[in-house]
Image 1 (cartoon, helix red, strand yellow):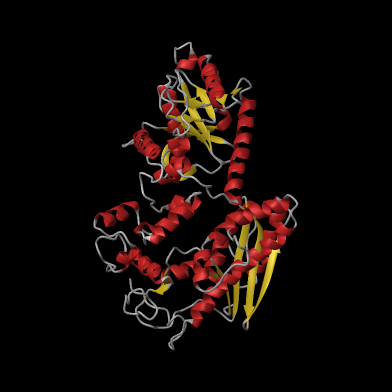
Image 2: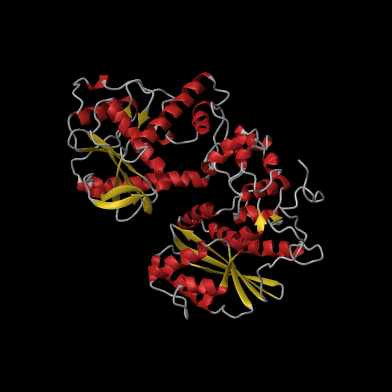
Length: 538
């Protein structure tokens, strides 16, 4: 434990641009914009609701821990007052502290750990996250019931590797505890996810080679460098924009996307790894148009798909993979059923079927507007009966990605239901359904991935809603449950458009006929740039 009695001397005055736990592992360009860029970052219903849900989940977990630890100390203030109070209760040896605030001695780093747990010779931090952290593979961990908060738990578990930033965040809190002399000697930290019943995964930051602690230290140093640079160069970040997965959720993505698009930046190629991007840049290849001119077997690209995407993006359209203008085997049957489901909290509340016979399409939804387990069970049972009726050779059910199959299989297990006549949901899908997204991936190169919201507009389709998306629809359903009846029509319209979009893609493919059959008029990604009538030169 820290031995300083004047606890106010243990920490410095926090800087207004201090480094926080959520910054660790984050894009350095975003770190700069969050602190130094004028203007208002983009917000939307989804981001706002995600934050609200996170706070609600945290409150539920903390309430359970407060019940298990009646002597837990809650820090309710903010700023210097909360920092001083946290130092004071640590100095007095409180077993559990929630809502604490920490700052480094120089004030350059701050942190707000959800829980500080006293162990033998100091404190260890625990963070609460509103997402699953346990996986079938990943980082070795041990597991305890969250309300027992036992870092010596022996039950083995795996922490999801895709959630490593959670560990960097909690490592930052350990760094701050070390800075002020209150860190436990063992580098064991905890993360409580959204799994129920609540459980805490304990991870040793010193394990591995390099260790998580080593990785954290490198990331912290890089972030600190970016902040120091930005403090004297506020108009331009230390690191230029670099498009990556996290950009889709960043509040500054429009700014960076516009800047990158303006220069045809190679980092906009979604199928290119960070390592490959760096190697291309070192070879002087910085623009997508340059990648499009490479041969698919060029050793500077890890996979031909990178060149194919570059060509599709340069062309601004879908391109076929084969070189001959032959007809494409577009999935179809005399009776076509396009299928899409909507979920809230992982449970199904709406399924839409677009049934097309003799060129006439009819939208048939099945819905449960109660948001209850019983309502979902009734909906799933009705869906299973309907799916069981579509098994004839002249019928085909189509969906986009394997989400419907996975979600229905989980719902079947949850309610102990099966599709009549089939041993499993998977066996029905294997016999009667086609994943149109998978077919598209195998036959067409796309400029920007294979989301339905990307591919359908390239085929001339547009949604009636000006903000379509699965995550947005969850917010709409929540608003409906809260009493906004008009959200029902919005959800039905959105679901209907999703299934119409699938049909629109096949209709477009059939219309791209140069005389040989469906799809024969689509330029080939392998015939580059010979087909200048459809593909612009660069």
